[in-house]
Length: 230
Image 1 (cartoon, helix red, strand yellow):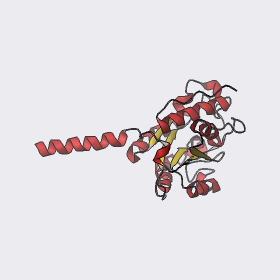
Image 2: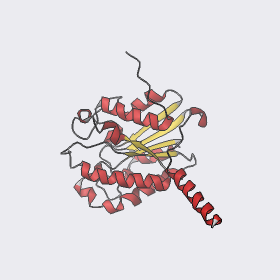
Image 3: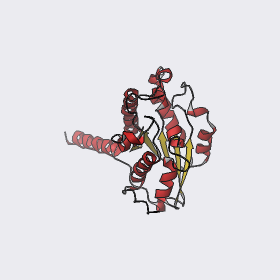
Image 4: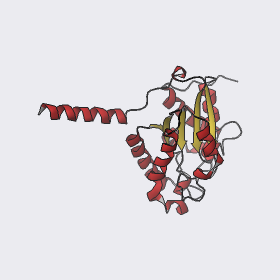
């Protein structure tokens, strides 16, 4: 029985390791600057936040000069290949791959909740897996984080809704566990702050700031610094 018990214990250890959060990144882990590629739709691009206030821009401010945060968000884009505007077809996607990032943050799925895109919901996990694999195959061997997308206060907008988003979150969490990916909870960061989502989809500058803080903590393992008074 002992060999079986040892095998069982080993399997439990492997499962626990796969489910554990990623260890914090220190600038010394990589040749400076640490290159971060932010993949996403209009929320990543910064719609609603104003010039220079997208969450990647604010994340850059929090991380400082030892990091280089690239914004590869494109408005209206879907994770689904059969969605109405697939991210896969965008130059930004190719530019993100060519940037040879050390870290990749993926936040897609919001536009995939629209009725015309939800028709292909069974392909969401397969398409997401392929997107992750495309970055995992890079020579830079980046750490990859997937995001639970921002909340969509009722009744939603633009055909985007929180009911379908909750299903995406379940699938994203499962994917993260199976592929040993980091998770950044953008949904939790804004769940109790609906006023920071004026059109019920896009965070304003303050909302994007909350997202940047969540990403900062996930990457570094530290609370986000308080911005200096201006």
